[in-house]
Amino acid sequence: MSDRGVVLVHSGVCDSRMWDGFDLPGARRHELAGFGQTPLPPAGEFSHAEDLEAALGDHPSALVGASYGGFVCLQVAVNRPELVSELVLLGAPLPDHPWSEEIQRFSREEERLLEQGDLRGAAILNADFWLEAAEPRDRVIAMQERAFELGSESEAEGIEPEQIDLAAVTARTLVAVGELDKPDFHLIADRLCAEIGAGKVVIEGAGHLPSLERPEQTAGLVREFLGG
Image (cartoon, rainbow, N blue to C red; front, side, top):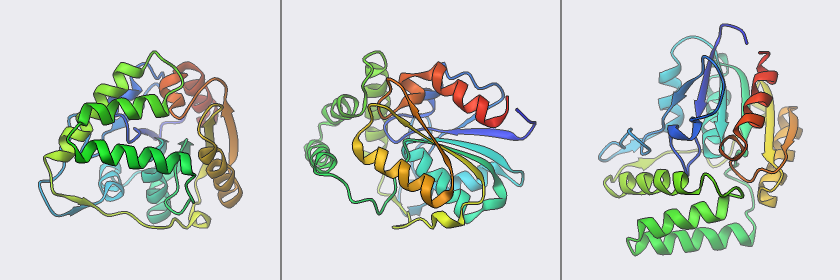
């Protein structure tokens, strides 16, 4: 890889610990507010994308985003293209995607558990829904429960766009999706590739979190794309 920076942005069901065991020399982790060791502001509005832009400074970086982290990276690639040299999207969502009934049922059940205050139950629901590999399950439950705890302690509101202008992405982009991921994310990956002009890779044996479920395979793919 070149000497430009590489920044890893975790998914919305994990935190920066999801990159443990992900072999990408020189990469640094960006932890979103409300996850892991990074609390939310107590109140008011905040933007994950603006926080990431501020963390990048003035020098272009390659951004690697897992799931929701990919959505955050996409926002930066559109809003501040000069900061993004390459973009790797691993199971990234899009806000205007028409979600399937399967995803909507999951969201309703998650909301029900959170309204009851059952943070652990909601964390278990997420791990069981998103993962195909059994090994990371306990790790995902712990990371997701921590995020729910931080969210319950804050009244802050995240500000996000309802649409992304994918045609505005200028960074060289790789789109990857787990072979066993939900059909919605295969459809989104196809749309990302078509509208950005990106290459697509399907990661064998992985579900929604390939960097966690198939870290060696996924890290090798990213290293190859970044030229290292």
